[in-house]
Amino acid sequence: MIPINRKVVKIEQKLGFITNNIESFHGRFKSFKEEVKIQQRKRNELFQSHENQLKKLTGLFEDVLEINGKIALLDTEMKSQLQNLKVALQTDFTTYVGNNYSSLSDFVSENLAQLDLKFQSLEQKFNEIFPNVVNLETSPTTDPI
Image: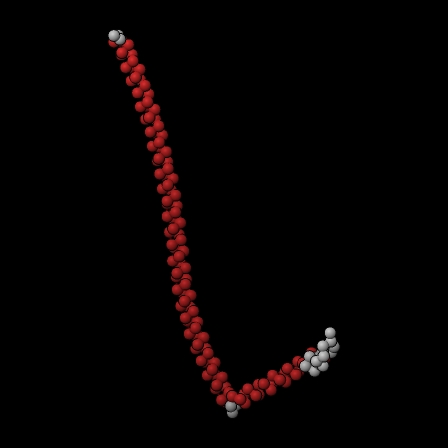
């Protein structure tokens, strides 16, 4: 039989081993618990950062929608004003032609005649400045090559 003192010593050794394991586990558990807290804090900070960015993007998107709405209103207003201007110009032109010419064809004929005179004047000045330039309309059609 084993003396009681030896049994007590063996039990004390086993208890010491168990106590050391419990203390070691407790230390590792505390470290793990601290690491979990750190990771949760980092996750919360990242989440908050993303939430703030999302709020900013949402605000920008709302601004873009508002601007697009204003552009649509301006576009509609501009089209309306252009239509009014077109009608006014047509009315003014019709009135001008009606007051100054017997018909639209007279207006066109007179203005074409004025343009023809201006073109002849420009052509004459061009020929004076560049006398050696060949006039394709009056030159022979033979190919110089």
